Length: 207
Image (cartoon, rainbow, N blue to C red; front, side, top):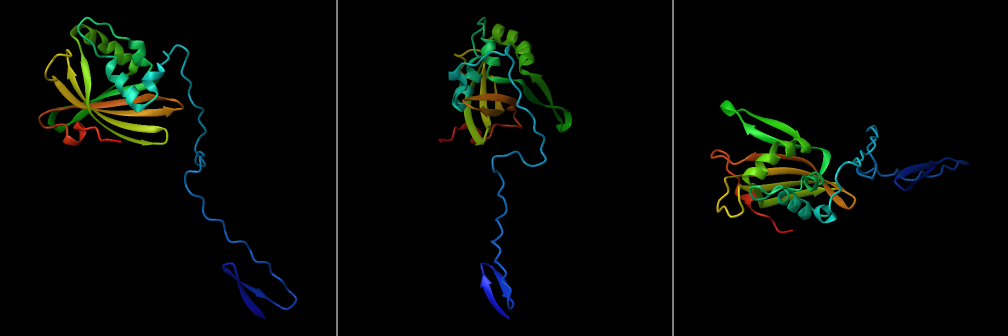
């Protein structure tokens, strides 16, 4: 009997017998091979209905563009009409706008509005009294087709108002869909004496 080392296994050859060496085992599969993980349901992608307004390409092709439009469209002087179809076009139809609100004794809660309900609830207020949010800082993290934007806002009634009457942070989820972005959710809270905006959210880091 003799022995020899083939590849990484010991192959023993007896008289008159030949045993072929087995190829080394394949390495374990690495996560993320471009397929849905085994066992996950195969859900068809939803389609936007024909009645949903079509976005202007210049509003949605980059994160900068969609954030600019997000703040630009609702803004205006008292008595000035807004293009609410343009605003809706930035969002997936089921997008939620969610406000966090403090309660008593340290409690808090939220209320949720679909984008169409948000417009109905706010358009008279915006158009009658004037409203203008501007972006005071932004932090972005992205992976694959998702992006998360921390966007610090300042609210004024008129563009010429020297100081904002409130400010806070919008937490915005975006979907990258081929050659455009969609807003999926907006979740925000406002600044209070016990809840100041941190300095890191008052800056826009350079790419």
